[in-house]
Image (cartoon, rainbow, N blue to C red; front, side, top):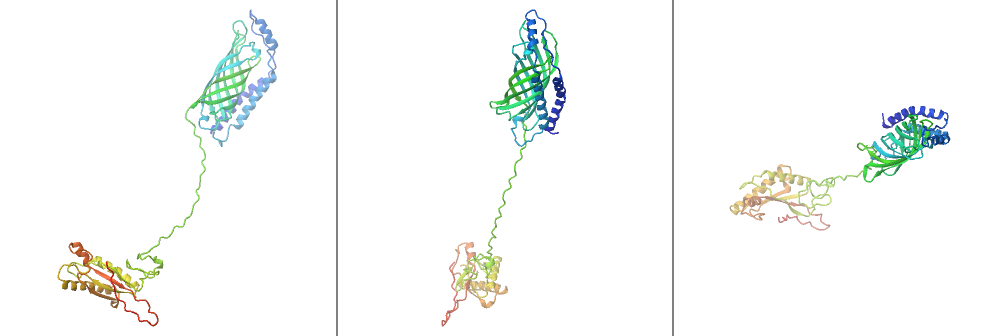
Length: 438
C-alpha cells in the first residue's frame, strides 16, 4: 500500500469517529446556562453571570463542526497527491513537536482569566510532497481564577489533527488544520468532572531555524469547541519547536534522457601505395616500382633517366654465391622489371679490397653474372640485361672493418629507360647507362 493510500485510510477511520460526534453536537438542544458551585465568596454572583452570559452561540458551534467535517472530507478525497513538485527531502520527514499554549476561555466557563498549558505530539507525512500531515497530540491546559474567585478548569486532551502545509517546512510555511480529540475536564470546585469530545480548526506557520535542517519553529492559532457540559468555544495560541526525525527521505526524480544527435562522418579510405612511388595503387599503371625510382603521373619510371636503384646485394667472402637477403632484393627487381618491359638494366659487381686487383675484378664480374642469371631464371629476358665487374672501385664503406668490407661486396643496378621519341628529321642518340653515385 502506498503512503498516500495508507494516509487516506487513516483519515477515513478518523472521520468514522468524528462524524457521530459532529451529529450529536449539531442535534443537541441548546441547554440553559449553568451556575457554578455554591461559594461563600462571590459564588452566587458568578453563577448568576453564567446564567445570563454562559450561553454559547449555537450557530458558531454548528459552523465550527461543519468546517471540521468538510476539512476531513477534503483530506480523504485528496490524500493521494501527485509528486510532480518535489518540495525537498527534509520537508517530508516525520517530526515531534512541543509547544506552550495560551488560552482565551469562553465566558461561559465563569472565568475571565487567561489560561496556559503545554502541547506535545508527533506528525507523520501522508504524501511524498510534504503537503498533507496527520498529527497526534496531547494537551494539558489550565484555566484558573484564583482562590475564591470562581471556577477553575484543568483539562487533559488526546487528539489528532489533519494538516495541510503550503510549502516545504524549511522556508516560512503557512498551514491550516482541523482536528478532533477527547478532553477530560477536572473542574474545581467539583461540580461535574468528566470527559467530552472536542473539535478544533486553525491556521499556523512553521519554518527552519537557522542552518539546522532538523529544527523548526512553529506556532498556530486555534478555535476549540469543547462539548463538555453546555459546550464552550475557546481560543488558543501555541508557540514552540518542531524536530525532524529519521533519515532524509529520498524522492525519486525522473531524469530526462538526453539522446545525443548521431553525426555520421565519412571516414576517408586510407590511400594505399604499395611500392612507395607516390602514386596510389588504384591509379598506378606500373606497380612494383623499386624504391628511389622517379616516376610519372601513371607510376612508371620517367623516361630518359638512368638510375642506380638497387644496391647491397651481398655475397659470402671470396664467393659469387648469393646470400638470402640478396635473393629477396632481386625478387623485388624481378617484379619491377616485369611490370615495365621497356626498361633495361646494367648489373655492376663490386668486391672489397682484400686480395689482388685482377682477382677482385674477376670476382666482381662473377657476382654480377650471378645476379643476371638469377633474374633470367625468374623470367626476365636476357637481352634486357647486361653485367660487368669493377672490383674494389667505388667503395661505399671502409675496408678496415669486417662490416665495411661486407658492405662493399655488392651488386648495383643501373636502370636504363628508353629515350624519348625523336623529333621529325632527327637521329635518336644511343642511350648510355650513367651510374648515380651512392
